[in-house]
Length: 251
Image (cartoon, rainbow, N blue to C red; front, side, top):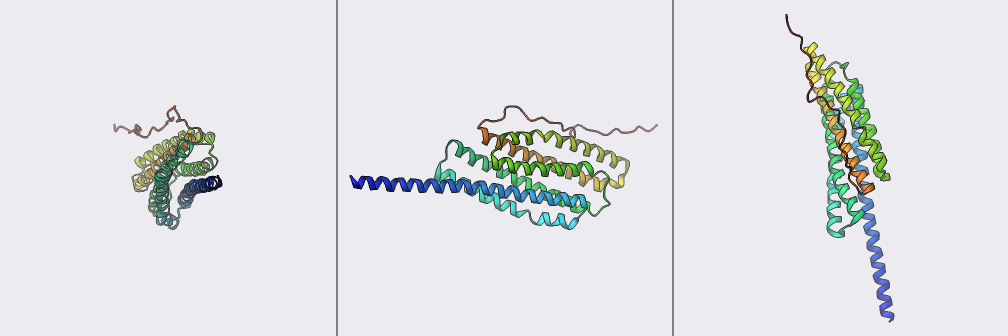
């Protein structure tokens, strides 16, 4: 009888130890997602400052630091695979692991786009500052705020905040439309502005794609918080694919 009691105590202790280790592994996964997001946010903040101040050296530092986000994605991938294989999580825990795996991919792409923008900014810095940068700079500032709020939403599992971030994507589209139209018109009026203008168009496009990945993570967080996929499609205001500037006809 006593042996049975001792065995049950030992078994209970082992089970509690396993659960504590499991909880710690999930906590480590969340911590690494936040660390990856914070690193991407720092990269984005730096590239925005480089664009606003025409600081080519700062842009070059962003490019050289791109590997830090990649390293964290590899770490998170390994953690997720390990949790799925060894722990076989279910319900909320499974949702956490799957959403973390997806979010890490999107955060890595955000870091890549920040690096791509930095390369373009480094080139733009070699030309006179363009008067058409305002909507592009506004896109960068909005993207930085979105990413900051995204990390807060993930930390607090705040589905309402995640939904608000998702709905801000139309603001990004509006800035992108404005930048595209203004830059295209300026390049037509001033051919000497074409080299800088082309790079600036790519910067705007990269900001727009970066924000799409922020929106994807926001949808993951909403699913993580509520366990239900958003049924309504995203609103889109992107008109750049169909825009053509007016061309004056010669007499």
